Length: 206
Image: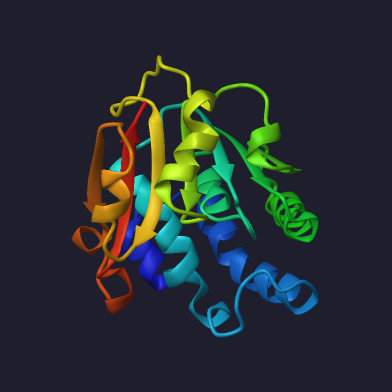
């Protein structure tokens, strides 16, 4: 939590309280339904919350933006981003029902009004969004095949609409497989620590 406040010092009192509540909520739910590895629960803020918020270092979503979080798992990156951007709409989907149950319960406990969580495969999702976010659920080529037509062309953010994908390691080969224009943002430029040295946000333009 101290790390979080270092990198995001302008949080409101409500946002601070919501972020602070994540530790207890995830420890409680993780004891019932394992959505975060046991070793990672002690590093929740670094490996899950801050990692998710790396997207917020790349773009400040404007009010009214609509975002689809594919393969959200326990709610990452969607829940931390929803706390940070309360005027942005988030649709969190995962094919595993017990994970979505955790997302729904955490969302309710935090009082987040801008999150909808649904058990579904991305192929089943109707409608379009300004951005699709995700944390490395698969290689970029099949992922883009799933979401390419779920992104609207017009947007009012500083980045054109597209995909914001959290990845680790060398992604050169994966990027060569997709035709879309893209850009890499190294999270080590924004956050200190060994964990972030190989982590990136891959932005793929619609």
